[in-house]
Length: 176
Image 1 (cartoon, rainbow, N blue to C red):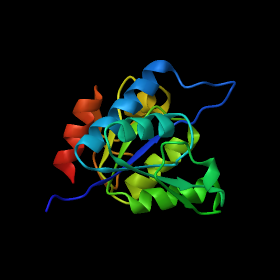
Image 2: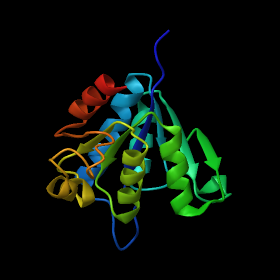
Image 3: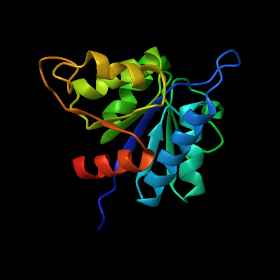
């Protein structure tokens, strides 16, 4: 039996005053699509932005999507989420729950909430791949890494970088 991988995709949400750039949307879509083609389950925060793009990609490839929602309202999930898990915990705790649930993480772009998820993944020793060129903290984090690989001197898990969605999926498949 093929191992089922639960991939967490983290990245920025979208607001009317701060739309997701088209290239970031395409990257997230492609990651979701490729993950689903490998029969991986795509987990996200279930809402808009990177989460919606990755979920759409996964659905277009026939995959399964899970959204870990911050509220108790399953209707907040984007239309590509198969399984909305309502938590009522708010954004911060929802993020922690998602990281605890997944086997590995791919980071695409991101703002402060994504940075929190990256830190949680690191503290929990989850394999992490960050997509270069996707903006936000994904493009900034490399400059502050300890020894170019770790968030701090504990060296919990090496953070890897990919230049394409294909490379990100390939790296993750070798880590889990």
